[in-house]
Image 1 (spheres, rainbow, N blue to C red):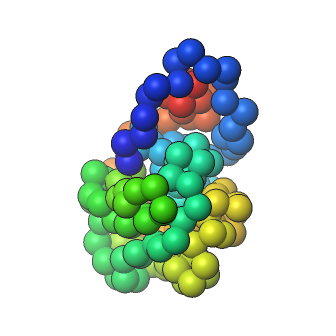
Image 2: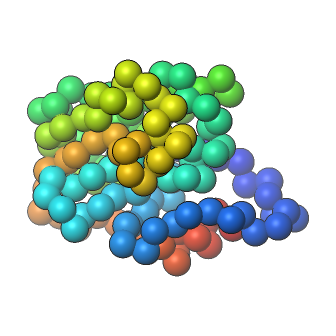
Image 3: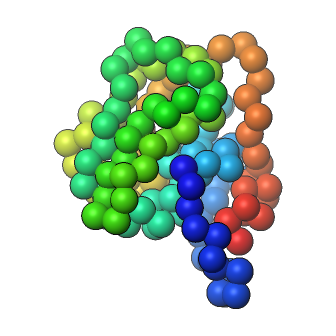
Length: 137
């Protein structure tokens, strides 16, 4: 997910970046403390996209590789793919988000999760909360 980097002269963003999650530079978060791992978009991504009007999710059972476009997010501003930060097999998708995409904007780290993926054994290249904060600030 490519977001504008034109906020260099603005005040630091007051974003929620939970410490227990890991992040990609493409603004996805991953919770590997549970199995299957949960994936969603960050508050920063949700704010940049604006109010979501459509979310196209993959089917359970789909294979994903790190770097694949796995979800399409459509807002009144843009259509943006979510780039998978991990490799594995999609086990569950959040049908509530497909029915009401605004859930992602309201609670991106909770009810707005997108996928649950059974991860492959390889170690994904993810950022800590502190590292991700430097990407968006």
